[in-house]
Image (cartoon, rainbow, N blue to C red):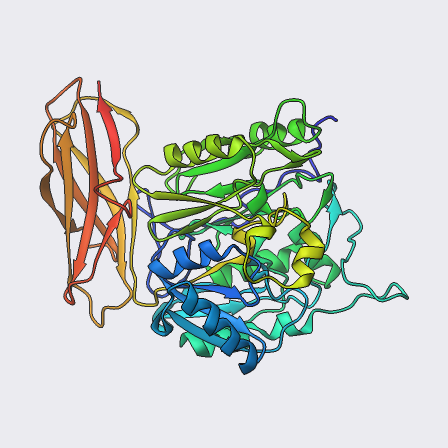
Length: 492
């Protein structure tokens, strides 16, 4: 099957990104959509669960579980199970709300987090009345809807569309409704001004009566997305959710799935990488570093969806498919995310103590699918008072110089006034010495800082990371798991 560039690749639809001295600029007065790897306090899942109970236990060790239950009877039943698994009441916030057929897909109907200038964080609630349509490769293909009555009429998922209205108050975050289809599994954001989706998102919104111009204009106005990259659909027929194809690891790197060379979809995947993703530049103006994760078949031609993983604080939670390739996938994730804890989870239904009969009927044996895995059924509740950091890291190889300057963006969303955060950059040479530190200084440009590493050396490798601490003693590093994870550059 030849590569199909479905409709003509759309990249950087919205121009006019503000820059200051070459740095991307996110002023306090402008919205900023939160990226997956930013600090989170909670994770949203549904009950009865469609994720392994071992995953629920692990998530509870890191964050608060926001659990959707349909009524108080089910809530009491869930408390009994959670107690058996050692999960205490203070680790759980229950959200009691009506359930529809898509309730478990908290990623898809769940609200997106955006910092809305001086208003703080808001949860932006897209239109989910039409659930998750399917299409072929073509971006203007006819949409097929999963839920229809015997007469062929679309059944609307009204309950899921209303669920963010229950989640927001429970999390203590105000909600903003938008009329656009903005399905979470098909939206990846970099925390700056860039997002990625497959082109089915434009087709869904055309179906709802919205032009591309209206969609992109409001994405900039609501989320601050000045560069919205629309890639070709990658499934011959499916939901086309981009989280089953690729993953943003940070502002500069992406992890893209690679099917076996003899798989029918291999040419389409490789065509998107070669003709689309490789032509893009990141928020710092450089080409993206494209890493690959190798997929394998697990049922006929179904592909193990290893990109459909959850990055939550300093851990990556990866779906496993009970095949030998699982071990390779975990190794590739660890190589891509040094310093992070990588945890894999099989979902063998016969091993699960509490699952609905519907789950057994739908999945039969393995609870993950090629288009619906761990990322689809979880969604972070982010820290409204986070310290946000973005580092303009140096290239992997640089020339010898008197000094090496690292630029960065930092925003303390919990601060009541500016100037209450101190920063430090830690560095070491050739990994033979202890970490040294230099101060991070404010440049005079809002939210922009820099630090300088002493130079005059050649033939060495320098590792570094940054840390900011506010007046309340709250600290944040970048990379987040530093010093276990760090940036590096070599000097010629």
